[in-house]
Length: 110
Image 1 (cartoon, rainbow, N blue to C red):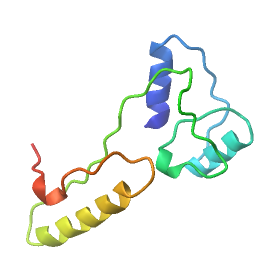
Image 2 (image 1 turned 180 degrees about the vertical axis):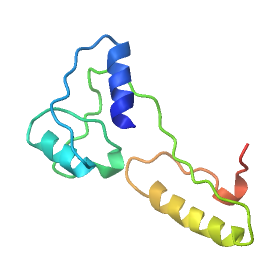
Image 3 (image 1 turned 90 degrees about the vertical axis):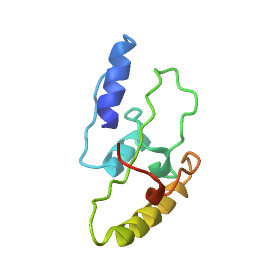
Image 4 (image 1 turned 45 degrees about the vertical axis):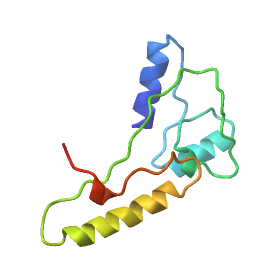
């Protein structure tokens, strides 16, 4: 998803680019960046310590990405809400995350 968004943003801005490496995981891409092959877009919370976050790059901005947890209706709904809230708390506690949002039990699908 991040690769697609990056390519779209570069193309819209009329920027030339070249894909010099693709890998099966974010770890392999981070290794290529650490080796000096180029730059990559990744969620800040997963940037390894050997890389530097480029805060003001001369590149087009990317859209915000939203992560959501969807729950099914059913007898175990309360248990699922507890699990969703625990997962959301872990995600929110990572560096680079936006301010917390309301817990899963307070949101309705629409």
